[in-house]
Every structure is written in structure tokens, then in C-alpha cells.
Image 1 (spheres, rainbow, N blue to C red):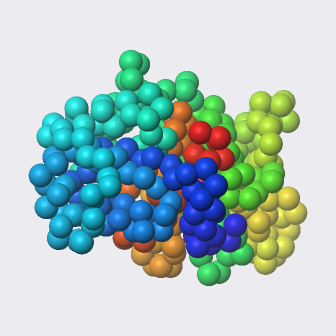
Image 2: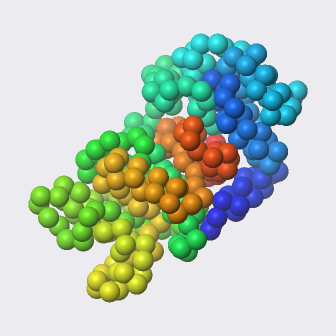
Amino acid sequence: MKNFEEIIKYAQDCSRISGPKKIAVAFAQDDDVLKAIKAAVNEGICEPILVGDKEKILDISGDIDFDLSNIEIIDDKDGSSACRRAVSLVSSGHAQIVMKGLIDTSIILKAVLDKEIGLRTGNILSHAAVFSVDTYHKLFIVTDAAMSIAPDADEKRQIVENAVELSRALGAEIPKVAVICAKEKINPKMQATLDAAELMHMQTDGKMKGCIVEGPYALDNAISKEASELKGIKGKVAGDADILLMPNIEAGNVLYKALTYLANADNAGIILGAKAPIVLTSRADSDKAKLNSIALSILASHFKGE
């Protein structure tokens, strides 16, 4: 897939064949979230279950001309309780995707990780941002820009595993992973380069399968054939990365926002590593980005066969 229009079309096709995915929206009384849900409903790609303050949900929906006559609303005015109910809908099989509404991220993640009703898998939770940029020839994933603060090599392995599954859903048969650092050579004073070497050893030892992992790579060599050729870098991933594994949350977050605000890149983001995709958008995200994120979560859910 090369753009988000293809992802939305895929979600539409899947919905026509097997029915729309149900999305449980936790604390849904948020203007931007409901606008995104409205757009997704209009595209025919999801069936929302809105959990939250029913009166406020109805008021906002009236303001944005969103017809809720055929949409289930679960009235729950307590944020923590609403998150637990939304997550429970997924863990019990009544919905396939969770979406964050007007609630702190920590509260919904607490429900996701709850041992009784949560969506734990034993793997690390990580954020995957998908970007479409005019200057790059395909969709690519940036991870992790929002969840893992300073992952070690083994945590990076799990982050890669999460992203590889999503990359396959986007059409990459054997995803190419670039371990991003500040330079291309291993430097004992730069932990990210040491992690890159360890990740490559993990792949050699068979601990990472179904992808190609190379690094350390500076960003230019991961995404530019010209830059990699000028520097004499001949790896399979050079200039053709599907996944950019960032060294830490600061680097990931800066790249995410630079692409969004300076490059005007089309984007989406979801949380991976749970039993079901989690749409966890920022209030600053555009309506289009939120719709893209919903479509991406539906793609991920269909790919998992849920």
C-alpha cells in the first residue's frame, strides 16, 4: 500500500465482505473523536460503541450533525469505569478495537493492562506511526514515538516484532527494518549503535524472523538511495526501509512531529502489542489523522483475523 486512501478502501472492502469492525470508544464525549468516528461511519468502515457521558455525547453529536439513532451508547460518567467497560467489550469479544476518547492515556492503558479484563499478551506495548510522504516511495512506520521511553535491546526486539506485523498488513512481504542512530558505525559511547549490533545478532541467532534488520543507520541512509550510495552503504535496507526503529522516545517524537508539521505528512498512529489494536490519538491530531488511525486499526484487526 502506498497511501491512506488504499488503507481506507481496504477497510471498506473488508467491511463489505465480513461486516464492519466494532470500535469501543472510551469516554467518547470529545468533539474531535466524534468527528473522526462520524467520518469512519460515513466511509462504512466501522460500527462504534460509544462509552461515556451520554448527555454530552448527544449534545456534541447534535452540534456536528452526527446521527446516533443506530449507534449504541453506554452511559458512564466516570472516566476509569468507562475505560474498563470499553476494554471489557473487546476482551469479551463484543468489539474488536479500543479507541481513546476524552481521557488521559494512563487511565485507558491501566484498563488495557488490567489482569482481569485487560488485553495483555506478554509483549511490550508500543506506538507505531505510519506516514505517507511525497518524497518517499511507500508508506513507512516510525516506532516508538509515544510509549517506550528508553527501550533496551530486548525491548527494541519486541517493538520491532509489533511493527513487523503491521508492516506486513501494509503489504511488505518481508519488512525492512532500519535501526536508526546518529551514525553508521558502532561507537561504545553511543548505546543506540550497540543496540543495533545486538539486534542484528539476534536476527542471526534466529530470535527475530520474517524481517530484515540492519543498522546502525543514520536517517538519511535508511530512506535515501542516493545518500546511502554516496556513503558506500550497500545493505538491503538502505534507502528502502519499511520500519524506522528509533533509539528512544525523544528521537521518535521529534521525527513524528517534524514529519507532521514541517513535511505536512499524512499520518496515523496506533498502539500495538495488545490482543487488539488501540487507537490512541492526540488532541492535536487532525480529523484526517484520526480517521487514518481508525482505518489503520481496522486493517491491523483484519490482518490478525479478529
